Length: 216
Image (cartoon, rainbow, N blue to C red; front, side):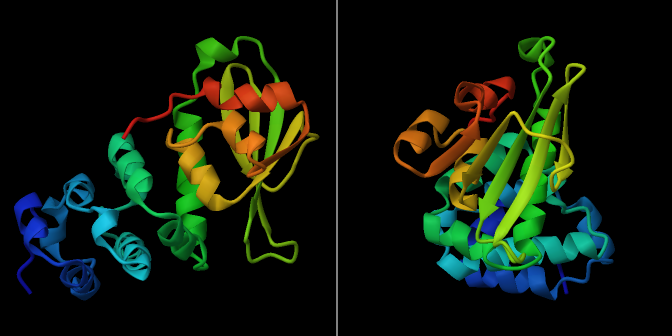
């Protein structure tokens, strides 16, 4: 099939047509080598997608990336990623994080970006461990746990808990994604009961200030 995934072509496709197109493409098709995921991202408006269509679209891109196409979320521009998340509804994000595999892909990518966007000049000599517990997971305890380790002016992310934490934060994937893309405030989430903290509350409240938060 002939592939045309320019911004103009994407704009002419209905959501279902775009998803269908992505699902039909062979990841090994040489034509995909000229396709930029940011071009696709700029043509995506979650507000024009249904709840499941948004998850279907991200899933189709993930399948192509798994097949070898250069369409991994890791290569998407931070501003494009933040814009897509900011325009996605609660139901859409829940549909994404409710799918095994897709949930892990998106959450892993957001935490990976935390390592990249860490601001060492703000951290100074800070040494601390923060545990993030995201609800609605598929494990026995219903939580996905990630660990952020701040030391030697760097941030590293682990899955699970490997060290004692200075603070432990529990929230839903929806609120976490909004927080990580600058579309929510940790103090506000805490005051409204959407974010729960154990340990050093003050440190947890200011934790996200150690990162460059992309603006949509």
